Image (cartoon, rainbow, N blue to C red; front, side):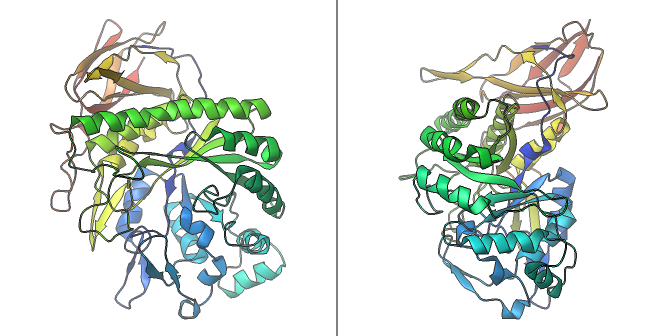
Length: 488
């Protein structure tokens, strides 16, 4: 591996490390919020502390599919006067709207993060969306600002990121791209700038490799779009039959999931090419608004709650995906892993008062050194991980330099059987020493944390990197992620 320590492949936006909290399963209730002794929902301090330690650049809410069923007015005002609704999408549970706009924005304040609010296009109206935007942001005299004040909030929240619907090709209305593009133009017209806040308008993007959606959207509405929201999940199976197990898998399941995770590179390359045709200045962001592994939910968990365990395999698919994002910084500026707590590829799992950090949490923790840093160009012999006549690149990586001049290197070896020796030079710069290093690995592919053993898989100090005569040699174990700080 040769790293160009003086090069610049663009800034790694912190928003690529975004999160997602939908009214789904135990993500909101019994996730970010719990009931107190008075049977009222309060924000969980332990979850907030863990997420603040990780760093949360943004948080997407209220969906997901739920966004196009959500009427914001049901979630403001006195809680005992808020109407209930059955969440037919996710488990058929009754949603009492205890957590609405004010409660979510209180969480945003505690997390010291930036909100991404997704509006209802599928079952709402232009008036609904315009009023919510005004309620969130109008700084002066207006009907919605008055209502906000009556509900206890004088100042606007200054929300910038706003989604105009979600998955409009599917759960958001099963629309054709031509219809949605015209509808987007209509709805986005009424997202006015207020005070110092101009709306960053996020349009429903494609599902996976639906390149026609991107083409039509950019052609018909690209001039009014600030970000396009691509969704792509990683499955060991199919949507219609079986998505694969989170814990009980063999090496074939390991290989297939890594292969599917690597498809992200092709998707980003092709969608970017279409966008470049209509937006050569690269003004419009390509946002990966939902990504991550999707397994069959855990046996015994509530149907429709999408609760799944999280293993070393999930952690390494996350590091590989983040590396891919870092190769497309000219257009890819934001992403939201699905989801933060108790749903799909979660950062945190809870069980009553108990809480654990998942292996994916630790991947994000090991990668936070790259946020807002400059991506350094590099060349890497990735090797091959071979299985049953097929092969994948064995190695993946990111190199960056932060504002203080510190160089960080992350390397992932997806081969579960063989270690790799990687020699690294900084080109014309002389590498002097390894300042620090951490590793995430385990003996078994399906190693995971449980509530009885929450620290089974956590990062450890890494001593397998040595510098001799300006060259760094890294002994990278099988199925491992390593992050180093280097000094030149």
